[in-house]
Length: 407
Ligand code: AMP
Ligand code: MG
Image (tube, rainbow, N blue to C red; front, top):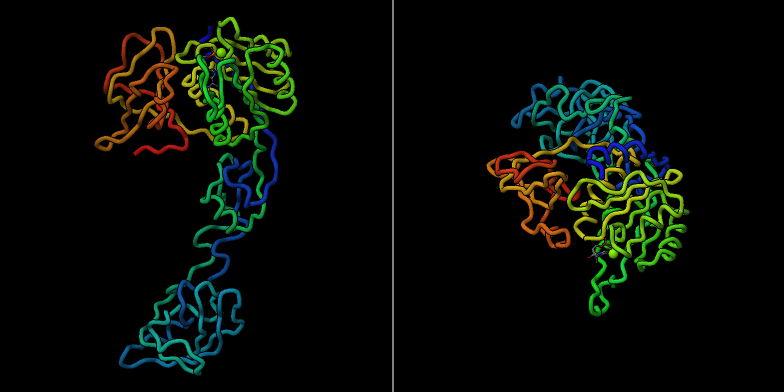
């Protein structure tokens, strides 16, 4: 059995990077950017109007008031997409819509509400003086050409999508999705929706794995429940190895008489890097590699499988895709947390704010077979080995489930 730290270090030495691919902007949401996104032009790209109104020379409007409006000659219209090519001279103006290019000679926009309004007349009455530069969005006031907009390693959301579209990126370089095959093993396993016979239970782990793998940004290639039978396991595995970057199993990897997963891996040439980690839940964790493929054998207890995926597999998928890692998050315990003398201890938990401070508490259902402990959880709490308990007020590491919020 090796320590949690040792196991992490062994895995990190064996991670490989996924290749890149170019995808259409529309298909880039949820993907990890593998290029820096730079501003290909300044933003705004040209001086333009922030209001529907009139482009004027501010000096011409200095004396304007409601009682004594100033009349300006309308010489053209500039609208978004159809700029006016005429220069404004003394006593002249151009009807200028939001987003339209500011005509030459104009130094301010007067909003239409402060005039006698848009019309086909030759003149417009100006009721208010325009101040120099008013309502003009200046070229480059937001972003300069060549500025770094988005750093590679970011996962694309609507936030990034909007900026990429703004700067004309029709395609993005993103990480390829890791191809994953998952399998569960156990003669007792039955699919939800079917009837249970004596001694049987429902397969829950593959449902959890599928969602977690997809949320992490991977692509499921094969998914199957296999009986506790070495030949069937080897058959599945040899096919899965052909099409996958990562294989994740649940169950059949402990000390049981019918636990054949480890043997099947090894028979197929998988190099075992470790098999047991000093952690609870999930001690019989197998990690192996074969030709740039990573193999994780997680124990079948549903909490061990779920937490095992989040603590061991999820971070690896992130590194494979080149996603930036966040800093570790710590919070203050609001309730005691049971420690293990020699093992790293993980429990589902809830992190929340109390009087403005980040606090957390573990679930009260601590058994590794008690998957309802995930209900209402927004994090996994994890502690190094120790005696007794961590007490309220002590700090503990919070692994926030990435799709959850702290409220
Ligand atoms: P094992 O790791 O095969 O010894 O399984 C440990 C426990 O997890 C046993 O109680 C199994 O019945 C249960 N188990 C194994 N696989 C699954 C699964 N896919 N879904 C739910 N429970 C499982
Ligand atoms: Mg089993």
